[in-house]
Length: 444
Image 1 (tube, rainbow, N blue to C red):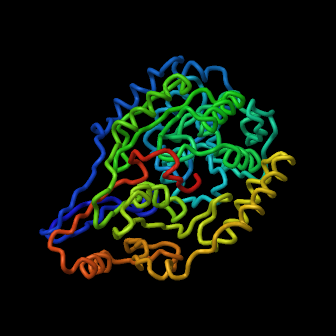
Image 2: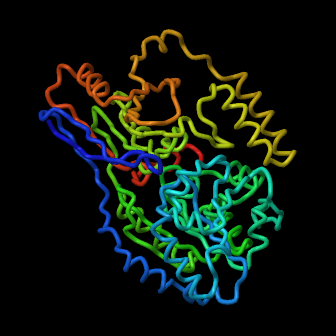
Image 3: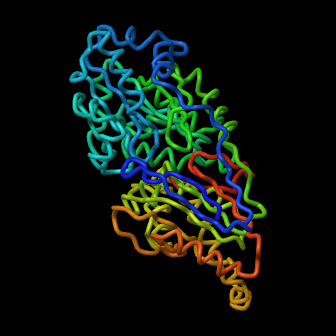
């Protein structure tokens, strides 16, 4: 048997798992081309020599109320590897950990498990600093409107801060090309700001283009709020830091995005019989497992599709893009969100257009529908372990055993001696080129 070792269980029960395949199968794994992990000394050196700015120890001198914005459990950034070095810089400036506030940028993601959050931040810093979990529904202050017309409500702690720095990562995003940089600010905004950003701007599909209005808008918000210093990590398939850029993110962000495009590129699964995507290191819940599904969306229609994710939090939560709802409820929620950011005149035009279009939409042919082949649901392999109970979803079969997946593949391709299997070991990090607009993933 062939074996592949993958990781699963980010922030909750991080561990290795083994996938096995018959020797006769054509199994190809698309590993990212990442450099070796950075040593502690290399991380420290990058932090002491930021791009376009003085060291943090100089920036922090004389400050009384610094805030460190960090991304939340939905993001795989290993904050615990970077934060200790920042605390040393603050201490060199005369600022003790108990005077530092760590603001967790949850956006609309809601509750954060305290134990998992301590794992992400690092137990020493979690115990010594003031950790604040952002709420998009309360405790925000209005600071103005961007040139795009987005009302900006930020966490009130940022209005009290005399220095704001961030820790984040660069991961593929259908909305802004890549996350990270100024988009870290989205996680500490109020619901009205977040809704406006998502439903006023168009996504970039599968292009990974960072020259877009959504990106420009959040970058403008970062400037308005005073988030000028970010420590940006790139990680490998084991969640180890392989590159760290520090300092002026407005200057270095294009370099960070280019690194991701180059190092995490992977081919499309055009000829695959089976497409397997491991959602680690973004597998905390089904909501964010969906970030890894680009290979699934780009797979041949006839291919069997398998996603791997521990999903300790079950379905998870997203205030704008909740999973597990009926199609009609999802449509109504999206319609409400889109209408809420439109001007009254535009709303009327959209209503007239939709009524006209719906009344003239041809009904699907029953004959053609029944003639279409019945394809497998998407299979989700959820490795054994603790976590919120989950049931099958519409079009999704959830199993706890790899053997169950393997048996289904063998049953489906019983007559084929060489099944073409394509494996993406860290789908949420990997970049697959597709025509603009073809890939419209889930929200962030």
